[in-house]
Length: 398
Image 1 (cartoon, helix red, strand yellow):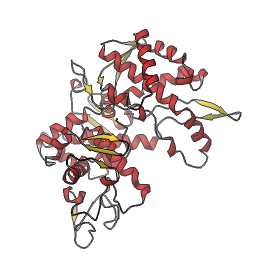
Image 2: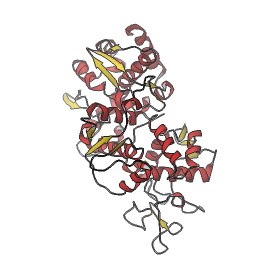
Image 3: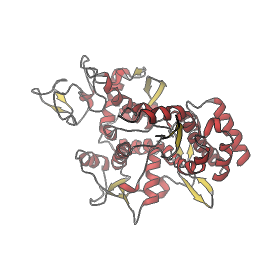
Image 4: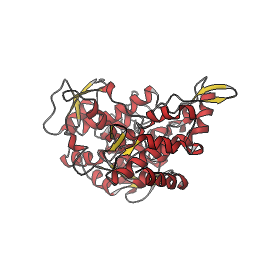
């Protein structure tokens, strides 16, 4: 499966590499749990022993005399900013979950169950390298071009660039907001199925950091390095400077080659919506309850868009988007939240394909998908009846 990264620490490739090297040292070919991915101070080594940026200080370091400089307090029990530690409160478990999401998206880990994974073949190759190795940069580029949301980021950069420069604010990667409402106890309640602004900012920041590290994007006001760009990027990313404009340091053919790019880790069915469990703020109880009731329909229709375009891409076809809308509307129990708002909502939902890793071109109502996707990953978690229905729909409208 593949999900959308949503935490800034995952943007630091050097931190992800340290975690991967730690897992390789501790588990090798064996499986491990999310809990076991955290820094464990009882072990002989921790992630900090594999982290080149760790600061050594017998005075302040708690873990073998080392601490993570990205933590503001050297005595912080978190130990390692990327995953936190086993000493930390369980509420911090989201950090390690996001770390797994990032490593899986890169193809460096494989998920075996909801709470278990192991290092992939590509992961072992990456783990054998030092950060400064040129071969790491080559493998990183391969890894990034397999992750759906990253392809979405680059496609947004290409679409919105002007004279080879793109503004950060012109790039959007996240879940579409449709503006739909439903009736609850006689009241019209808005449903929250789109990414919040802060969430989009975090995701975009992480993906841009990846793009800088691999040399795909570079701050406009700086000269693009001619070699060791990943090392130069590491130095730049130590700062928290919010660069607003970037030079596109890649040809369109990188993501749109003559033979379509294969996206090995597109967004999976399960992660076609944000987690509605996060809607705990005051005044959002009605919105959360309303959203929980229609979440499956949102997943179904977003998956339908992504799956239909992926099938069409394999067959080198374009699809009439109006036909998709009309056909899905015939199955309200699976796809429709508010029939009067459905057509307008679907005009926004089409953008989920970009976030999933299936950028497209639209001409006179026809949708032309521009990548190929790993259908097994895309379908992960999708109900069999939904998959079969969409395949039947594809046969009728293609």
